[in-house]
Image (cartoon, rainbow, N blue to C red; front, top):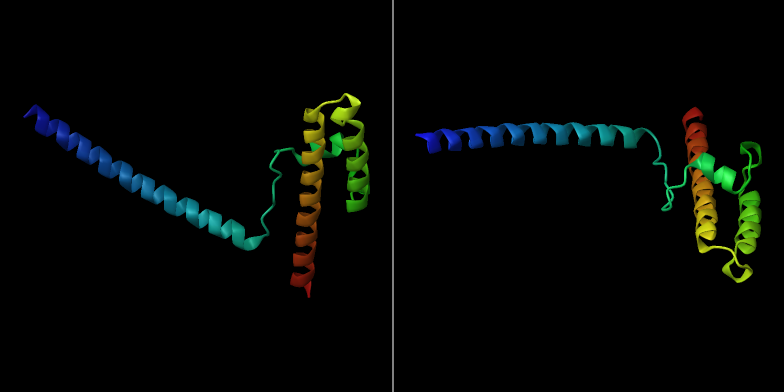
Length: 121
């Protein structure tokens, strides 16, 4: 009798969990599809550097954010922090990921701008 009750509890719990999991998956898929359809996906850097931190690392302001400025600051800081000059690979990595983040941010902003222009026409 006890094992029958235990088996019944296990099967009931598994079916409840299965239904809840299925419903949660459907809701997540629907929310993801709705969010992706309305706007371009924002790319993230592999290094995980936030945009504000990347701007501080490369010593840039939002007003001077351009590919030329990013490349200029990146080249200078990457060279200054080279291992040959006694500095660290860690700093070079931070500089690289900061540059990568800002370039992806510029691409994202350009996509948003183009979408807005296309929507207004």
